[in-house]
Amino acid sequence: EGWIWKTRGVVEGVFDLTHFGHFGALRQAKQICDEVILLINSDRAVLEAKGPTVYNEQEWVLIGKACKWVDEIDVVDAYVLEPSILDKYNADFVVHGDDIIYDKNGESIYTPFEKIGKFWMCQRTTGISTTDLVNKILQWEMENK
Image 1: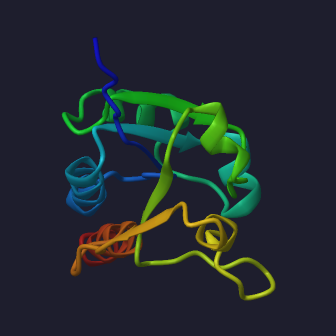
Image 2 (image 1 turned 180 degrees about the horizontal axis):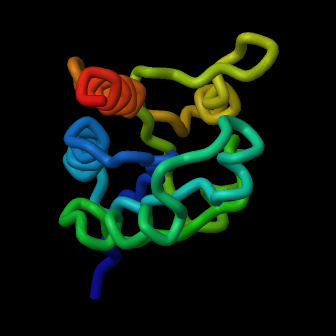
């Protein structure tokens, strides 16, 4: 009969202490994509790049599976994605918040996707971050000893 074109977007990240800001990014991705592929950075890759986390990759996968804006989920053993990831997942572009991550040279890790027109930036939710949550927990612990 006819061809139906569906846009597929990749959202990748650590998603430690998953909060409404993470879900806001997934919701925005779903507004522009027919299908959202959530790629979770592996425990090994995150430990190497950032250090220890609270949740592990399997817990992040379970949270992602429960999210209504996620159509597909996988774990990638990388902290920085290469454009070839789009081919692997038959995706049209990468979606990330405006809290850009920079490499050791001060360049956005999404520059390779931007150069080929395959990057879409969503708006970060203000007032929430995993770092803020950790700090609140630590402050509460100190005040309640």
